[in-house]
Length: 116
Image (tube, rainbow, N blue to C red; front, side, top):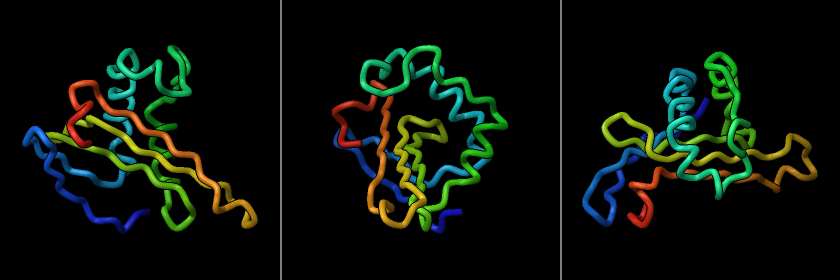
């Protein structure tokens, strides 16, 4: 699991956001974030409507497997404990291509153009 410390970030509009690694206990909130936010960002991500089908338990397991030392990291942007953005990075396990990564990022529309 990640040893990254949470960081407080001040946005251009003055709001404060906490950036921290996701943990298995965030599974339910992450699923809710995707369900609520999908209409806002579906045109900009690889996952289409109806394709995000993880259960809470599957999401918990996925989050438990995130390990920055192995090239896997999921960061959350939170305002008052509510997820407003996600950054995910995955790298292949094979040594020869471990320098390659897949980056995914979403932000709720209310936070677009704020510096998040």
